[in-house]
Each structure stands twice: as structure tokens, then as C-alpha cells.
Length: 327
Image (cartoon, rainbow, N blue to C red; front, side, top):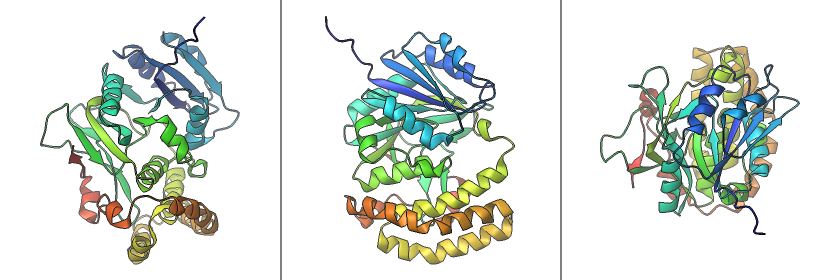
């Protein structure tokens, strides 16, 4: 008897009190034109357990309940460990993929073997005329954002290279994601996918956005009412991101600007949560430096090449520009 064929893609959904959006997410997965996938739902100790919702799917599914809220990063690593497939797709429970979403991502991956991660065109679920995200961008001083405009050139079938991809709806090569160590548990959430994209680039891999792979995205549904927590995590994780990943020459160059940026941010938003996050990030610099040694010792991308994908214009951050290049 031959062994059962494994699906090419495992779609990982990390749920945390997502009962308002998860049913639509699963219904959208059930309507995919591409069928060679399985689903793993990781629940981060939600009040309402979502396991019964998996009956909406006809593809192989598994469900794991965590005793505590592990955060997105660690829960994705649980899914990565369980994934026995060529690709791992990350899908937020507040992201609703169009029927050809997965087919377009897999097609892009098959066409571009030199790329390790593929992102989606994210449309606002509240307003179809509003772009929620088209590629992840990184200002050299540590501010990351999702591009909020579609390129004016090219066709809907085109691929665009970007600094990174947003894990709200993305496809990763499982083997490569394992090679770089998966997601960093310490980030919990916020900037954890930027950190993955950064490490993929340092390891010599590339990231692309498939314009034809479309999801409607609510955005922030799992963190409504937790803005102080978000401020804490963003301030902390920005510092870790730079200490771990930025090549030495670039790190030295951006440090004065980073300090000024933090002073400006604290003046504009003098919240105790942001200051606590920055203090915790600085207090754990030694741990970030230890991680840095491993990352930089295996780096295959030069500082010059990486610099091509960093953004140095602060106005691009303010305008949420999509800094991508058509392939």
C-alpha cells in the first residue's frame, strides 16, 4: 500500500478571541480553487474555543489548543513544527482570501525558485477601494509598515519584489523557514514577520508580492482595545530587530537617527507603555547581541545589497508608500 500523499501547503491560522472573523476566514479557505493543502488551527487560549468551526472545511485539518496565549510568533513555530509540507502559509483569522488566493501564491513560488516568501495584495475588508497592504517596507531606523498603494505599472498577474512580506497572508518555503530558525518567539507579535523577512534577506533569499493573490483584511481585529500593549511591543521589538539583523556598518550609520526617532516618538506619544517597551528592549540588548552573532556569521547578503531594500526617506513611511519593484 502506498503512503498517503502529503499536501504541498499547510495553512496555519493563529486564533485569539477571533470568533467574529474566523468563520468567514474558514469559509473563504473552503472556497479555494487550489485543493492541495491542509489546515492547522492554533488557538491561543481564547475564551470561546474555535475547534468546532473546522467542520466548515473538507481538507485535512488539525486543531491545537494552547494553555496560554503564546503570541503569534511562537504559535507559528508550533505550526511550523507540525507542518510536513513544502510550503507553510500564514493566514490571519481576520483575512479572507479570494478563491484563487492559494493557487496564485503556489504558482508564483513555482515560477520563482530563488524566492523564499510570497505575500498577498491585502484589501481593506471594510472598503474595497482601500489598500490594506502591498509589501512590507522598512525605514532604515527601524520603522516598518505595509505599503498602502498598488503599483501603477504592470498587470494584475505580475510579481513585485519587496523588502518583506506581511504574515497576515503569506506563503513561505518550509525548508528555508526552518533553516533560518522560524519566527522569533521573543517578539510575541508585531515586527515578528518583519524580522523573518530581514533574516531571509540576510541569508540570501528574496521576497515577493503576488498582485493576483488577494485577501480582504480587517486588520487589528485581535488587538482591539489593547493599544498600550501594542505600543509596548512595537517599541521593544524595533530595537531587537535592528540589533539582531542590521549589518554593523549600517547599524553604526543609523544609530543617531534611531535615537532622534525615539525622542520624537516619546514626545509625540509619551505613553508609559512605550517607555516600558523601550526599556525592556534595551535591558535585553545582550540577548539580542547573542542572536546577532549567529545571524551575522551566516549572512550571505552584503550590506550594500541589503541597503537597496531599506527605505531612507521618512516621507515614504508617512505616506505608507509601497516600495516594490516589478519582476
